[in-house]
Amino acid sequence: MKPLMPTLLMTATLALAACGGAPAPAGSAVTGATPASASTALAHGHEKFLGSAHSPPQARDFLVYWNKVTPENGGKWGEVEAERGVMDWTALDAAYRTAKDNDLPFQMHVMVWGNQQPEWIKTLSTAEQRAAIEQWFAAVAARYPDIDTVEVVNEPLHDPPSQDDEGGGNYIAALGGDGDTGWDWILESFRLARQHFPDAQLMLNEYSVTNTPDNTRRYLEIIRLLQGEGLIDAIGIQGHAFSTTTETSMDVHRENLDALAATGLPVYVTEFDVDGATDEEQLADYQRIFPVFWDHPGVRGITLWGFRPGMWRTEQRAYLVNEDGSERPALAWLRDYVQSGVE
Image 1: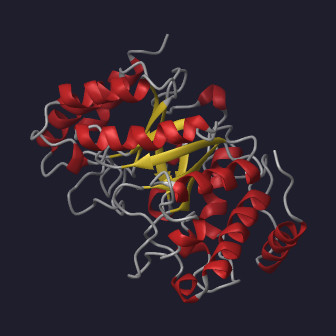
Image 2: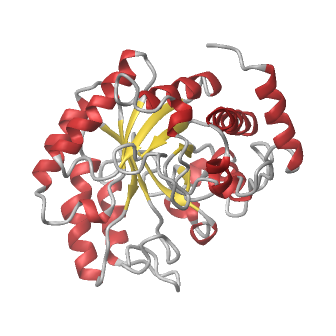
Image 3: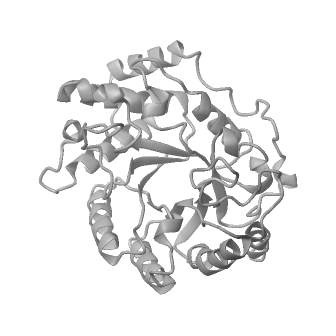
């Protein structure tokens, strides 16, 4: 590992000081904390985790159901540093504390992406953008020293940070652009991540991978480049409802999961959701979709992208718990299905 540059360490220290220091240490009180031995999480005791995105709308009863934590929006650069040099860690702190105070794995979402990036970075020169990116990595690493998994790049196939639109970042050149490999910017992002997060699992993440063989092929191209430098430790596939419709047989998903698992890297479903206009439709789709991912030997865990109203697909009724706290039938089925595999 290369040592951190002194300027980056100084920047991280200043960023922490500006917003009140590091989050409360593990062991501090968290509302709703549940002793591990008394956990009611659906996958408690299972070799795989079943987690959820964490945000204020999803925080209620989070530990009742889930045993892995990913911040929904709180870890996106544009949310943390909307104003240059002014860091708002509130939502990210809450997700991190929930994980660490309850001995749950924590995934940082996300370091580099082409959405929800700070608007001010588009006004900088390439050199200034590069410095800002390094400062962002250093600040996260300093504040959250025990991250389990770092999602380094999100949606490289569909939403790279190359657009001059709202939240698009437009800083791909600062990371090397396409370069000789066509994906140099991803390689450089992972090199930075390995430097700043030497003890964390480094992940690539993307949507609509397993439903489209060509996307699987292109994704594997990036993964193999990263493997060539020893830069990647895990593969993320999102698993959103729009990628698991009946238009594509679940056999196609299974075959593409096989191809991803053949890399030897663990596969994680990172943003799973199933729409449910009616309870009956949601239940049937959970029964059709979930087992293909959960039972695949290459998949080590699944994270739902929310479970209560207020999640991103609320309009499509993808939530599992109603506003009044009652559980939808798909959740009851999910509990039984997952716990049937606990020895």
